[in-house]
Amino acid sequence: MDGKFIVFEGVEGCGKTSQMQLCAEWLQSLGISVVLTREPGGTALGVDLRRLLLEKSEDKPICEVTELLLYAADRAQHVAQELKPQLAQGKYVLCDRYIDSTIAYQGYGRGLDMNLIHQLNNIATGGLISDITIWLDVDVEVGLARKRKGNVGLDRIEQETIAFHRRVQKGYADLAASSPARIIRVDGSLSKENVHQKIQEIFNLHLKLG
Image (tube, rainbow, N blue to C red; front, side, top):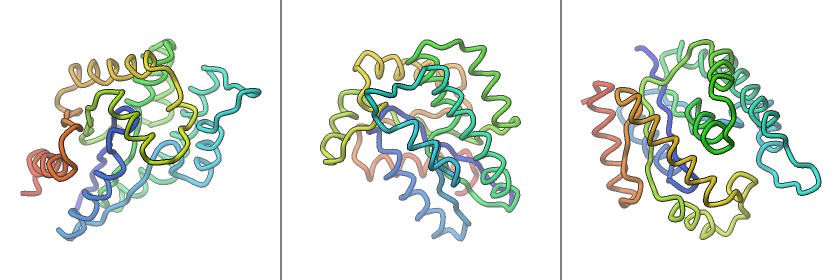
């Protein structure tokens, strides 16, 4: 069986983690071997990079280009150590964030040069792109409100301004419009059960599970 690379994307609080878990359980019930991973943090090195990227530090701010390079380093390690080997074994890899996050957050959100971002993504991925990307689309204020209800402190990215998160949201909308065959929008404001049902339908259609 050929492996499949499925990415979940969206603004903060869109429901990626919950939907990935539901999808993993469903795919496993079909006899499919599934791996759950994330960026940043899908490797031992990535765990350290994730801490550097997401911890809030007023006296040690991260330069925007440094942030971009740290995400690229995490991705390069992730692709080489985890993604390509798991896919080669025929597994379905469900990944929380990938290259579109970098375009949306560092490109649209930070305003960094898109050519640089594309070059770094190409280097880090070695050409690996998702079979499909599920974009869970929710209003940024709804998503951030969900995060705050979790009684967990907001990380460095989550604490950015509403204007920043709206730019990120526009990035996802533009990406979905430019790559409709790969990036598929799902209304993330629906109930958890309805979102999962729609994702199942997408999987059945695009991955030929049904």
